Image 1 (tube, rainbow, N blue to C red):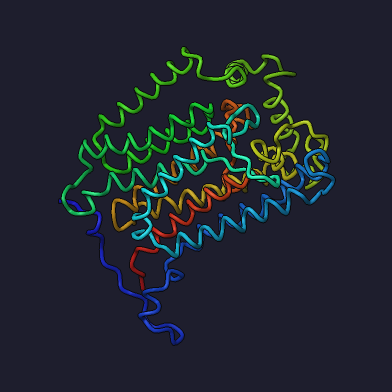
Image 2 (cartoon, rainbow, N blue to C red):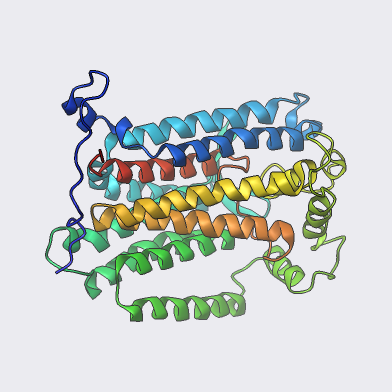
Length: 399
């Protein structure tokens, strides 16, 4: 029977520079994937310039302070990095013991969003205002909760050596755990986040070794769910208009199709090298709505050109590559599932965000990981990086 713990044993790092072997063995710093960390840091810090360019001239948003969003974005990155360090410090095995409490906390936050405590921003009742200009979007943390809860349920018997693959009972329980937050988020309604969560669930099932009938069943259920949501009128009018504009780009370019039209103009006008940072006419003219959040990629396309936009895609690709590598070399199924879930999350969300800016995907209102402005998104993505590093830190150190 194949076991996820039966990987080849690697020699521990010998004494280097007077550092005892015991310290090298116990220190998480020796096991961190520095390439992954560097790519995430460059994306997060580099995007601060894009956020600054998109907002410095918008006095109604910045309250007269051109650096308002710049400092807040950098603060979000710093807080996210601290959360990442905390997750690494706790460790993958110890972290899984608190997953039920984290899951319960996220469910409470999601339900609070549907209560009078929640507020509506851009047509979605998916925020909780904290005062002082701060708000939280629990749907972002629900992605983390789904990854962790499914990983715990699916890996329980496999990592204990009782089964080679997750039994049907565990797969069913894992899907129930994932369905609850997705159903609450759909009530907001936040179709974009639900799309991301559905891809996360699919990626996890594929990585867990669950029977193929579960994967095919999930796909068929997803198709049926989309049809039901459309027929039952769960989506709001502005969400339906977004899909209509995607199906027919020429539909109302000054109305529902305005965002996509302006985004494509901005990216297309950048050429190879762009117009220069802070010199984009579409950006400085404030033609692209929500440019610091959902459409921040258009700033890179216009001001940094094809080369700058490709740099973002390449860095995201590095994050996905290292995440896949961590999943493949994980010492247990729990680690494999966690890493695979994060990779599926980042891959689809990045593709959807960039795709909607290019007009090849419908506008879904989801941020670009590490790049878009937003505290909840930045915190959750850095927690996810911490989870990847925690899984990586479980591995014995190669010589």
